Length: 462
Image (tube, rainbow, N blue to C red; front, side, top):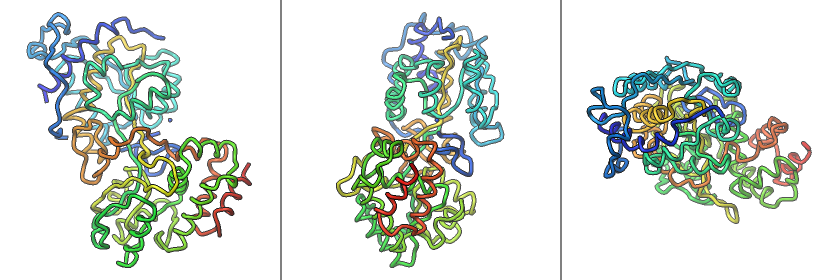
């Protein structure tokens, strides 16, 4: 690990002079039991044998920080006298907080820097904007990558130059970088706890039902559901908390995220044939008996049945649901992930919901290279693997290994080019978000006879 750090710090040191004069100028909230607001709840290696960042063009010694410590003698950056203040969204007693503190201590030992972590908890999202505006002493902070790009971008450093010097393109998930640039025109945060959504399933039930190939289309998915019913299983869990997420995933496969957002804002549901078709498919899905018998349940009643009964096969959610179910029920489900199936005549089905808790550097940071090096130290290699294993989350370093309950998540993220946001545009109209969820619950309760009736109920909200 020390050699890996040395390589990383030496490589990234090429960018330090670009930021020497740094001056002042939503989610994946943490893995709480229920979804926060309208964005995804956040997540609570030994590295694969991929290549490490290039080392063939080691910068000249004069370009690196001073080399008068033991660590520097071995080629590591020397940040003696540097203090970095970090606002964390975790508590120091949580798995994420424990790994974060361990990484901070190790980085200090190797570089001489002092990492002062202030444990702000989930409240960081309510106080960070004011702190940045007031030029408070915040060098690094953790938050949802969408909010960093959309709300805090003007207060955050663009890390493009340092990331390129560090070879980040071979390490992280490009979809998060591209999405930030689309939102704000800058690459201003490094993913720390990635998330991905889709259909999470019990592999053992699929095997028992003879489902040997993951369904790629809606028709194939219905065939798999019937095979599970025939084998004595209930295909799908669903709780009220995620009814709008499940509805939105399906409708976005028909019309795409952008069109779904426009419908959310302006109405016209009954004029869109693909919406009517998609709603009818879900109505037929419910009528066929493919939801577990108590669904939609009061969160987390239905999802817990995946672990309590081991007779419920799947759930449409984000990856944190796997740890929730296992922890809530004391089970060890053999989890897998498949992307939400394509529908006939629909939109691009290659992309998945993806989000991340990320780390950003304040433009007020006096030592941006040291801050960036610590972020890379935390989100790659040894400590990223510890974070993934200890918190049962997706690794931020794509070369690392996802925990068994996160099987398939790294591959899905790597394949995602244009990540879908939470609720895929359905709740772009925040004023009607709660009513949309009520309509979604009614649909899954069997409250609509037809897709046209569902669309009329949506239009009646305007």
